[in-house]
Length: 354
Image (cartoon, rainbow, N blue to C red; front, side, top):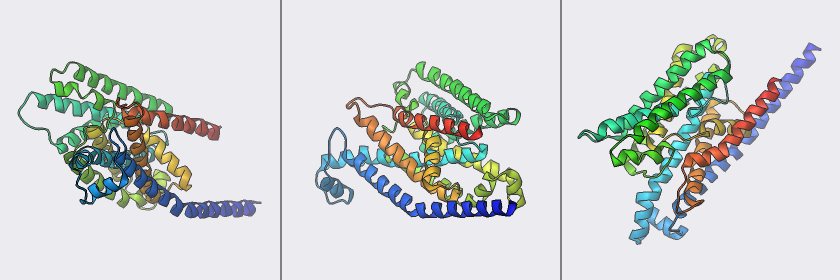
């Protein structure tokens, strides 16, 4: 009987692995096609619609319409690149936090990491408004990174005494509320008009993106993603438990530090330029696990990045166009689609646990 059970488990594992491999190419091809389609739609659709021929001419430098070129190159292209890069970064940040806490519901928005980053960016901008120096992109990312580390540090300290994940998530939500309240107070009582206009940013928005911000965010996210991919084998061992990771030679303490640092950098970059964006970091990695039938980081990291980019590109397009000319906060749209996925995850996990 035991031999029969072992044989059945082996068969099921082999069948699962085979199913995962068969899904790999179609899913990635679909993701790439959806990314390209979302980018084209974001560039061509708006208050001024631009046909594909004109768009191609502007992108490749053969177009002669200066007005359309200005709209694309100065407004839509930076915003589209930001939605692509930061959406992917947010999804990967969520994947890293889920790996760290061994829970699929952990994410930068839920755990208050994004709120801490938002608070420190607001503090930096208010301090800079009364002085002569100009705030650079790396300063925004640095301030957001410090805020992310502070809130993540509190969560880790709480996790040492609170073992129940539901209580830990509740604590993260409370920390997020505290940081958001402090941010709202700072913005409400700011005298500088530029600081007051941060209200839409504090709710999550890609509006106002420029090529300077695109440069800083692309470099930061690209370097961080390379480091995350180099850690994929260690992450694979870490997700199977700290004991197993130690048995295969992984420095668990260093791995934990690197996971938090890399996740905070990605989350900080998103918050610095787009504010806190909800549910992407939770919903996207879950959808990719289901689509690929795999938990391997070397597969899920690029898949989550592409899917997160699609999620934010589509959400930003809807935020711009649903009630045009009035523009919604992109976080409102991501919540509309992401929250039901998270609710489904909680219900499904509860059923499995019972």
